[in-house]
Amino acid sequence: MIPVLYASNTTSFSTFGIGTLTDTISCEVTEERNGLFECLLRYPVDGQHYGQIAKERIIKAKPNDTSKEQAFRIYRITKPMNGVVSVYAQHISYDLANVPVMPFSTENRSPALLLNQLLAGDSRFTGWTDYSEAKEFSVVQPQSVRSCLGGSAGSMLSKWHGEYEWDNFTVKFHMHRGQNTGVVIEYGKNLTELEQDEDNSSVYTDLLPYAV
Image 1 (cartoon, rainbow, N blue to C red):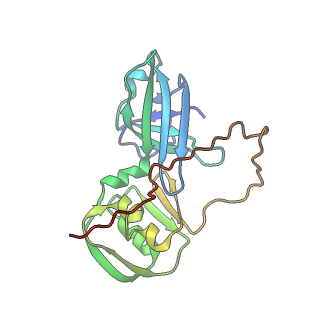
Image 2: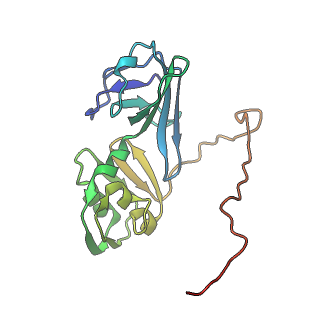
Image 3: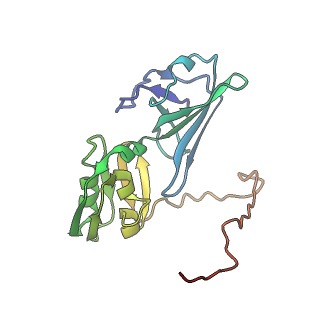
């Protein structure tokens, strides 16, 4: 799929927006389980839409073979090198990092109700979950919606565990994400390279106790 560029306030991605980035050299999307979800696009400075690529604007790109196109907001554009710039964009769900949640607590609330309550601060977003077990939940100090969803102590992710699926403006909180498609990864077939990286820089081997 050819990436498409949109204005920063776009909420519907069914059109061609500002234009299709047909001159794109490469477009790579990286998604980690309950973590990073970003797009890296390399574009030539003599490309048709180079002048329209700017921070805060949105790129629509397909993250993989089975998922539908997703929106990514540009947050960094490098200086040209050999006539090419690298454009970094985060999934549109990172907008929730700018939506605050004020302190509150509840002794018994279902994850579906809680998810919709947290997302109420940005009317563009809706939530879905297949969890039903109600639990206690609290926000002790103001923090962002995305922090309440996951990535901090006491978040929904730490309470119910599970796996998030960021589907444009829909936040899906699965008990288990994914399915068995029957695809097998084999060396020489669809596995072209395998690297092992060992790092012990954060390993402690000694303790030095002391008294104050």
